[in-house]
Length: 328
Image 1 (cartoon, rainbow, N blue to C red):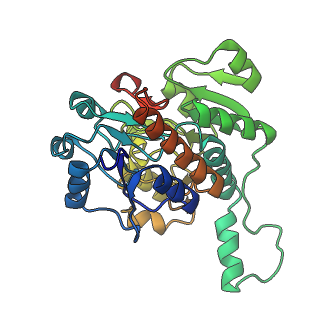
Image 2 (cartoon, helix red, strand yellow):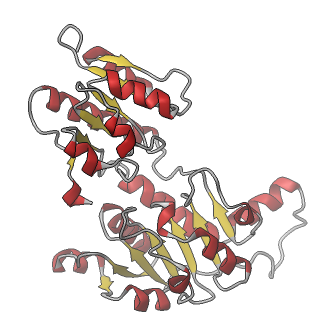
């Protein structure tokens, strides 16, 4: 610690107002070129810093945490998901972990609805036709999609984002169904006009649209595996704005190619930026580059939460958004 100020290392570029405020409060090291840090660079940062501010592109596993210096006491993650951090091992080494929950719920829910609309109404195909100059005028049989009104939407994971998706889908007159680790309180369920399914298999088999909104944990890895994907109706659509690892991407790709699932809208992928090349070839798939939470407002709010977590820790208190293994 220098001059009584915490040493803070930030692994990626953050919005200018966030970086400026971090520089005012702490001895901060920023990533000027915004390229993901190598494993060696991450290890070096963890040996020297009091606080590390990583993002989901930084995999902080047990081996990396074992190399941390005695000064590292807080990993203040920039983002809500912490599946890239070994929280249990960090805790064993006396390192706290915090995140930025609740900030991107509305932004991600907006994107989920955009993907549902994009797939159901074949918007990317229409866009590609216009950009290619191939449109020759209106036709009653061209680019026919499906109506959302009256369709059954199944939401897998009814946390903040899932509930935000439900509210938006209700405005499209969709029927709301959900499966969650815990059933919602009756008053919330009633307000959302949502039907709870204890059996995920039974829900999946009856939905027209399935929205993935649960976090990635050991228990949700490949939750939508080949067996469960085969339960979906051939005319159904699946959308994922959560984590790619929740879906068996190879199985999904095979079924989309075979016409066993009508379409998919994906903002996240099982292997990060290494997207299955066969997915890119399919017209019934909408692919986005993990931009569900990418709004200026959301990114700044995330940064503000990081700063509050660090400042509260510096003042000798528990960070308001501390993550403990029992929460995962």
